[in-house]
Image 1 (tube, one colour):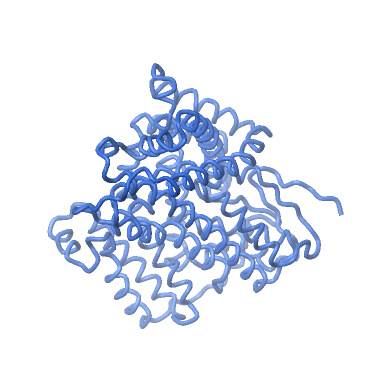
Image 2: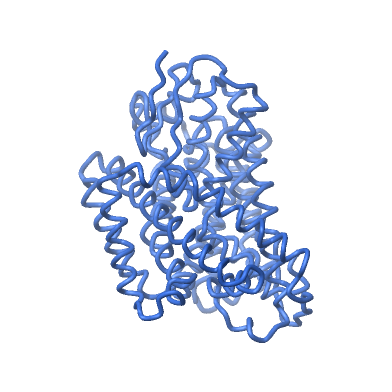
Length: 489
């Protein structure tokens, strides 16, 4: 049978895949919605439709795990672990645990939950809040992965990670205009250049990071300082939110299901095993890289010249110290190309998503133009301000997602979906009270267990889940329309 490449933005299922009637919007294809880092490489990945098992299960798991790692390992995320290490000093490992849980841990858990839940697909996780709220949750995730946080951050990160140092006379607004002008051109008229760049950038970027980490471990800049006022767990959680990997984990699963089907693993058990195994491999690799970068940050925690540096300049300063000026130039070029392809891919995903969501009422080209223009405007506020804007938004969005993922993993034990539903809404209210200034309510939220670590929502969420478990189940309705049944995907 002739192999056919999958067009950019569309992945086809093998017709005998057991997930095809759950995860597809149309009869044979759906548009994937991966996380921020993934877009720079996912647009260059072509999945071939195959008949039969083309690889052993172990081989498929390894290849899929490496592919998933490539989708989650992005230039925009590299700035957070060193910043965390610097601010936590000798307590860097505690901070890294918090970072790991909200980044790698949540992403892996979300993938496993999505592929193994009783309904299958994104609806089996997000739909526990209700069909409309679940769709709203997915839309909020897409907006965060698009014009509100991720896309504006691409140009801002690139500019602050070397462009303003290499070309000091170039203002940020001018660089942003060039950056997003190219992105708009390529997102409207895709070319193979984007695919080629995406395919080669991840291994090059990874090689530079591994070299940086190895040199930093063998010849550390300094010893990690003991910081009296450090809040390692809180800082780790907050920085973990910022990577956006956690909220991208659920929709990323669709891409992994397709890959498993392409290799000939089409039953639910086979897909669950291959996708879960690949998620563990990806999570392990991410943990090693991010852990190494966090350690590097801790080695400069006691040096005054690094104290006031923001995320991107801090990583470049560490790179300059360990790899010299040539290392800085190389990393700047790599980050520029990686962030550009990320912006292109994410803009395409947002355009596709809203076109499908509105049944074509929002045209693709009009949407991507609006996304690019909005992202350009927001990027001019600077990286630190974009991160500051994202902080409260993600602190509100993550808790209900975490509850949904955890309760989906426990659905064989807690069979009443009302537990997840009530727990998610309670966690949302608690996170609102703990994040936004709400007077006496916020004062009460600050006194909750684990509030100092940014986890004050956990106790109310647990109570909500327990109460919800004893509430009567809502009447289930059979949905005849396939599209209505999978709109959340």
